[in-house]
Length: 419
View 1 (tube, one colour):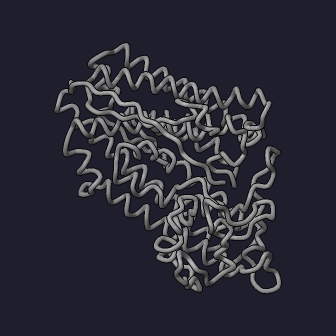
View 2 (cartoon, rainbow, N blue to C red; view 1 turned 135 degrees about the vertical axis):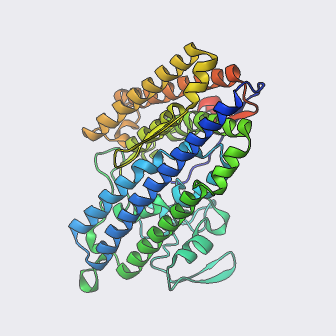
């Protein structure tokens, strides 16, 4: 399910016009919300870790379903952190370990015959490391008899320099819990049997011990990675220090993250491209059929950064001085416009979410000729584009230098997608 990301950038430059003291307060709120989001991501990942430990120790359908439920819950806070990616190098450099997508799942485990084998783009697309404790990589013999977090991160992830060789993070874990979704545009997610983790004669598809070893290693690594990122946004963390060190650069990071996630990443690469290709594997969470929630919580992440308010998983609200306050001080009508655009986006994403939860899955929406599905997805795409246009006006109105909003050929040069 590898694809090529084709992106362009839109750049806006204007003189700085924010009040310095107020800007510091806004950046402090931004950092506090980041810390809270990553703490929630860590807490839910630790719950997932505990559920996976139970599954491995006592394989059963109930325990597999409990691990799946924990994975779905873990995605809720994490997706709301993605707005921190594009403007913060510390986050963007790290993100590929925890949320890389798409992936060639044949690298990890068995796949259906229809998946195929190695390709010109990826020699290891069907390596199946779970079934192969030794193999040759880039001319070197690799010993994978013990699957550890260090092995996954240091040797297997992006093996041979291929980005589709995703060996770690949420989506590798998702594949190991659900298996491939072989339903095409039909209803249903992946349907991995719990017996893929059973021992002895009850084991299905072989190598159940190594499958459990891989699942545990990937989950333990995810928890460790999230622990590290929580520290980065703590009071003495590097990400917080960087965002607070320069008000102009900090506010630029906020607007870059909001604009790039809205436009190039979600509206373009994750939504519009799928409609153009009519490919069910263009789902962000294609094994679990959870893409409707991925998009929804990405949108919510943009909204809570602009408004300076995040509701934690236990219901506590982290809030403070916001970008909305700064914009309202310069142009109240523009602030009202941005708030309305954010609300419109969440309504459109809510429509997708509600339809999927009622049985109209996202991969069904992507089917060629499905007008209802295309209308739902494009409603979200167009709303994200509209709110990006408002972000552009905010940049011009308040005067932050050097905003580069990531683009996507699916939006900016559609013909290039098919070249």
